[in-house]
Amino acid sequence: MTARQEGAVDRPAGRRAAPERTLDPADWASVRALSHRIVDDAIDHLRDVRSRPCWRPMPPEVEATFATALPREPMPLAEVYGEVAARVMAYPMGNIHPRFWAWYMGASNYTGALADFLAAIQGSNLGGGNHAAACLDRQVVDWCKEMVGFPASASGTLVSGGSMANLIGLTVARNIHAGIDVREHGVAAIARPLRFYGSDQMHSCHRKAVEALGLGNRALIRIPSDEECRIDLAALRRAIANDRTAGLEPACIIATAGTVNTGAIDDLPALAELAREERLWLHVDGCIGALLAIAPENRWRVEGIERADSLALDPHKGLHAPFEAGCALVRDACAHHAAFAVTPEYLEGKPRGLAAAPWLHEYGPQTSRGFRALKIWMALKEHGVAAFGALIDQNIAQARHLAELVAAEPLLELVASAGLPIVCFRYRPPGLKEKALHALNVEIMLRVQESGIAVLSDTTVKGRHCLRVAVASHRTRSDDLDVLVEEVVRIGQSLTGAESGFAAYLRTPGNPSAEGRAVR
Ligand SMILES: *Cc1c(COP(=O)(O)O)cnc(C)c1O
Image (cartoon, rainbow, N blue to C red; front, side):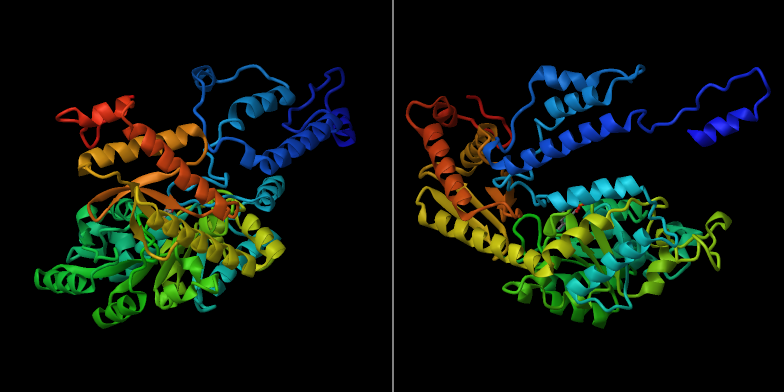
């Protein structure tokens, strides 16, 4: 305040300046007290997560509050927080809950949350510059290389998640194989259309990537997968040969280390060999599986991953960093830099001072970047990398336990369990056809969600619709999976029992349609 008052003295006599605005609190003491309360509430929220429903629907009156207009008038921060506590914190997605097994996500962690707070307090922009946060960002990328066995000479960048990390790898692949300066001339100038290959199990983000790269969805060839849901190598070889004959330009193999459906891992050493023979770029989507490299009991499953030209991994999955945190690694650092670097005058490096460091924004499409490295860095320092590896092994052992429970229960059918933390199964009483089984299992999934006991998702594996459980939580215990199996059987039995309206529905001729939502 003194400086401001001194400044005011310089103004023409007789005019008092109005106090200038700032977003800083007027009363630091009360904001400190409120902050302490928020931290206390946050710790209770996390400590008691197991005792709350995994997910619950929002009452319509709560949902309606999210449609109110732009606030014009101020509101005390304590009241704003009161709304957050009552309407936001109370209705989470649920992925930090020990019995959340839908899709494949991480479960976050308290240290990471503290880091996100501190990152925001420091507020540094990780577009680059000569400051500690930028050094730490580079260090986390170096640690990612070390975890998966990439050489220190490789480059990398932290991004929002696996989708962006994959986009970065595929961008470098496109540019290297375009045969022209594609950054200057665009994809229309490419002589022969580029072809990218992945299995029919690959993640949907690759489609978004080839679309964003201007290559079009048809440039992405879906190669059939084998019985174990891994890319069929013979079919891949044939597709590459046929495309060459047809005058197209095979450019990139996208291997998946851990598919979303079943956790299948493509044959990485064979694909590395094939890519070398055919002079193709090998990109590995390791969003689920790359971090098996730090898990002593399971790292053998991803041997060969270090031979990729580019690799996407997802610290917000395997390292439980709070969203968002993905990482792209590229073996050829020059190719990576050449794909994104643009240096306008206002971002030129300088010999000394804040701009005396390589810019981090030259490795991806973003200019301003958040300080997402800190949450990974703090949690790795606190627990050590071995703890995260052991958790991955633990999740895989828990999935094996679930697969055993399913196999031992006559009313359940194991559909897929590839040795990864993903198990696919279905409730299968005798006498029901595929369509009825589909409707029944969807209904079981929804009722499990609505009960608040657990959350799982569903998928179709080799033509069989099934429930899908992805154990990717440091909070899950084996007995949580015992509870799941009991609940699925209990709900399945009640739905198919003589008294059940759903059973009558299943018996109605023409019902149920595979898509139809079941009636109660
Ligand atoms: C999760 C996932 C992605 C997408 O990653 P996001 O972090 O959700 O953007 C891509 N590929 C695979 C195999 C995944 O499991």
